[in-house]
Length: 286
Ligand SMILES: [Zn+2]
Image 1 (cartoon, rainbow, N blue to C red):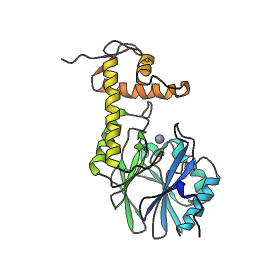
Image 2: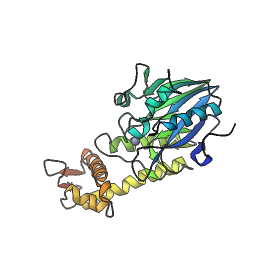
Image 3: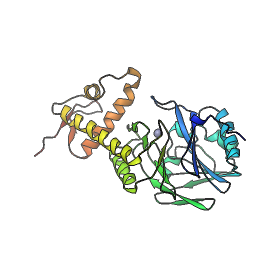
Image 4: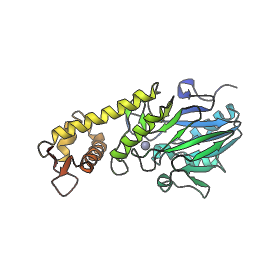
């Protein structure tokens, strides 16, 4: 039996974990979500069924047959962004009928689903075949974001990072303090592989996480320098993102606000105005 999806849309991370790429309603520069199958002894979890086209459910079902999977035990959600859950109802009408939906309570409140759900918190273990997968609480990109650790030391990363850099962190929902804590927590675990949802495959998880932290550190430093003089939000967006397309600007404002919220939490920057527009000014070091 030949695989029902072209090889360049498949990533096999281990004997138990494979990712399939499907078109999704995601943020540029991406146009797809890599959906993960975790399987052992004929049982499977589907992680983040974020496909936008109903036909993807048929391809997913055919691939599960190809892997000789008899039962989809659960659908796991790393977080509730639409490019991770759009296909949930299609999956529940087909391959995942009867499966539980598992995710962090803060994410599951944002997902429409039936009564068969399972709240997953940090370090909870969920059985699949003769294996156990461990949920890791990694908020920051989204409320209630989870990663899933596999017994071989690999990890399913959701949107912890993308294949080409840090994930989008924007308010509301995003939290820059929590995001950097989550990156550090995952880095300490030294995942041997890291299967994320968007972009090229990550070959060196530790280096990718280090790069994401460095990138955020550089952005933060730019903001600290730029706010030596009081600056409104719009001017700070121009400084951080000088060549941005207009349709991306709203996202970049939300992202800049998330950085500013972190700096204000740390007491490094104050908002001199009443609202989100600022102006913002750095607090001089003593
Ligand atoms: Zn997301």
